[in-house]
Length: 565
Image (cartoon, rainbow, N blue to C red):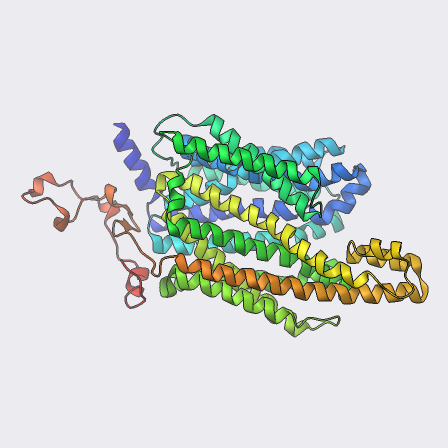
């Protein structure tokens, strides 16, 4: 069998019967769920890890940050590698590494070994995340079905982010802290053979050698930028530990772009960014994540420190946000067909901005109905935005660059999250600190310490005691609520800027007439109208019964819905 015939057979199998496609989607979603859960599951275990391993302040910081730092910096490397050597191969290797690293983390007996294990988890996550999206792009060539699949994929991502802390809390109540990592191993043992049997292999055209130097340059540049952004989020605005990584990362990424533009066969085809739909989608992902992560962090502090809720009660208050995000993901395909990318993403941004403005009515007292309504709108609006942006970005990218495009989207997601914590955290601190500068009866040194954060203000107030301590506590709560309102209004402005940016997206959901649920046109016999003049019936390939185009319900629904086919 020739290489061409083999490749065509692989493509047909990847885009085969509808039932197989949806089974593949389930496998991909399980992969994503593991990575999303592991990104947040450690947060609740930090006190137990600190008590057991007794890490220093720097070591504890690396225990928490090693996973997201390594994962974000290697997404482009492994996304493009999957395009060259096979996306399923990279995904299965990621499964293996993720399982081994989970066992290392679970049984780590010192901080340094745990840091190494967390870094290896980041490597495994970087292999898994872009591979899930790029395989999804291959398995669902029809844009209508792909939109539904991305909706399910994004809903699972929302569930994973929320389930992490809840699962971690449950495990810590019954087992030791290592159990939050050990739970990954049986899932990986199942995913490996299932993925090998069910997932199709796919890769790009493979022209030219893989640019190893470019991949390492991009990885080093992203690592430095993400590290600098995390330092900003920790409040280190002007230190060398913040400015040097940012400067080094910017230089390395500039060298990477320059190298890619000069190569005949670049690692990433940067011409994708010249397409308005692709570049705008990436920008929308950054803005949406900037708003989401910063607001979630501040909301968690408000619920616990101002309203006095327990961590479990706080998690339960945020559950409606997750369910609303799931609903938006599952309804996303229908909304995209009805409204098109431009109106859908703009509407999502506007809904989120409205939710943020609504939440400015929060004060020092609990208002459960207001929080419920605000969080539901927030979750639905943000997921609507992310869904439309991801779908547009993935559909705009060439299929042979699917891994690189998915890696760009995931990198934008991570950078947006880091910038959101840094930017909105800085706005919050700038609005919070002035209210504590002159509190009657409180020494200047105590006021300066209390200005760092609300949690520290409570500690200082407890040490002061008496009327001065109570005055400081009340002033800190009032200043925090004021800072929260200012931060919410700034966030609303950024979200409205995102709504304006989304106006560059296509108005309609354009579907390539060569894409059908049964596979690309290159795998089917051409229709008579496509035949060259004078062609005979004998010159046309015999029709393949397994790839006969079928009119799907989504295609019938598209009539009158504004979809251009």
